[in-house]
Length: 280
Ligand code: HH2
Image 1 (cartoon, rainbow, N blue to C red):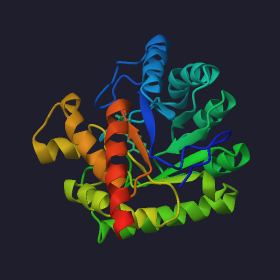
Image 2 (image 1 turned 60 degrees about the vertical axis):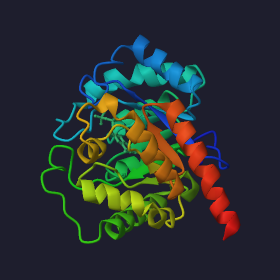
Image 3 (image 1 turned 90 degrees about the vertical axis):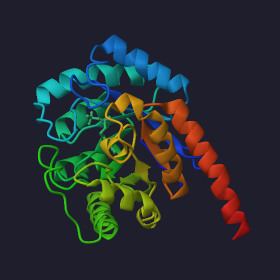
Image 4 (image 1 turned 120 degrees about the vertical axis):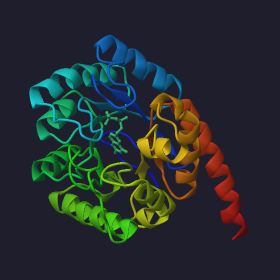
């Protein structure tokens, strides 16, 4: 299934990969590494050379217990980077829940808005509709400051699928084209280890919503908890395995720190799953 961005489409014949550029001092695995324009651009160039289809630029960490960043500061971090990457011809999504930041990124040429609140703000839905850009509608229970305190669900897969379906309807009512919407279960956003595992096992249910499915497992805490790996930088092998399994379950876009490894994982998973389909 292909995801339509503002001026281009992501490939339909293979899983797409979005490389992460965090222009933040405090992201959980790479905080501070790409805070200057030069470092951020250099990193985006490397991700693109490794095969990234999209570069996801964020200026506010959403790790558990993170404090919100004022809009002016987020703009200051993100706008010059988005502008330069667009000038270099890269497809850029902006990872923000603030309409003001999304608007500036779109003005600089961004192709998509990645909103971890699932387009909660009606202004974000109107903005996306007017720009004709792609959107990622993600599920989160609570906010980054509170989400890991005591997350609970009845049936996590059904609840997340229901939430995403409802937010897709709201986006479409505001005028966002259905083919511009990508959904994301929000791994690690208000979820225990069990919730994350249930969601990864149940991605086929999320895929039945009829939109491309983005999954972000890269270096996340649940991998560390399951495997006893405290250092996020050492979760690369676990990330690749989780990414391969996510693709096998229906993920079509991987949001990741290590693009080359994600492409290998996704290509292998897709090649094996194809055989399963042919035998059925
Ligand atoms: N995860 C993070 C941030 N944005 N967006 C989507 N759509 N899906 C995700 O899973 C997702 C996301 C958290 O990861 P990261 O950007 O590496 O860290 P931080 O939030 O600390 O900057």
